[in-house]
Length: 444
Image 1 (cartoon, rainbow, N blue to C red):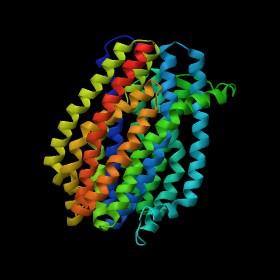
Image 2 (cartoon, rainbow, N blue to C red):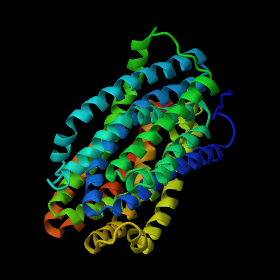
Image 3 (cartoon, rainbow, N blue to C red):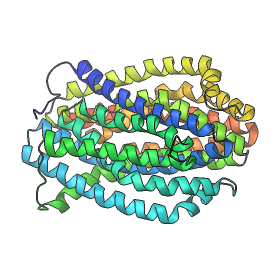
Image 4 (spheres, rainbow, N blue to C red):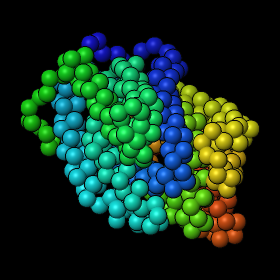
């Protein structure tokens, strides 16, 4: 397979191509999750609440795995820019081995500790059994999903912008088509309820793994290398991967804190929060998709010493995030009632969802800027500022605001705290990245 470099040609065109594929993939994933919650919503409010309690866990594991993949992707991008083919092959092979070991270990531990973890998140006794059953099945599919997720970043950095879209789309297609059959039953297939949603996830993740393996072994013909220099590869991957994973983990930690704080307001508020979160994630993933172009484009140009092209990529993504943020906030403001009505008929849960969608999406553009800057730090292999910013957003900004505003304004105060934290952190991240990038570029 011919490798593609982003060190030549139009930067906006490269960003648009990479972003479009990832936006399509992310939208397919989030729409699949949204349709899944539509199916689950027909099982009742308790089933929706059970699925909502699993959301922070799945986000945590996805974030951790994606962070390790970022460490490998940044190395792949810089090796591509510097034309180091042997190092490229070694990094990719060793990264996959590391991910296999990690995801299988986490899956075993997760099945063992699912119930205690969900109880710590605040799952009530009437919801805990449902949530536990879903989680134990979900963990069976986690290794396949983790490998496929890491593959997406590596494939983009390798220069193949289109193939990750296929990997990301296959799972939601399976979940949407197979999900209702397993959840509600048809013919000889029994109705499995919430367990059916979990099994459709496992099957979809397995299909993703098959596509990722096809790219690795057949399309790119990257025959695994020996274990020679595995420790060195691990050190280089973890140099960015661990801080990136920690940075990513702070988002689901924030979600877990929000879930815990909102749990005291009742099951309907939790269910409404879960519904609104799924809807917001559909539009929020567009900004995430835009930011994913940063590591391959900035990484390759940084590796080649083409700093002006790297700066242009960052600016292009910032502008795209702001433009989309305005559009998304407008869409959510006027369409909240319609979108929520598609998922739940519970009047109180629907009211909570609508209020969330009138507040939090106002900050989507700034959340996108924060994500772009964080990917930029990782692309130039300086992950610490991204981690510091994310910690500051959670501990110094969001948590105090959420606790204080929650006491004064109830659950609406927690929603406003999320929006304000995104705004402040986004502006700070953009300023810090510009200062660091210019200083390092001048030093080189």
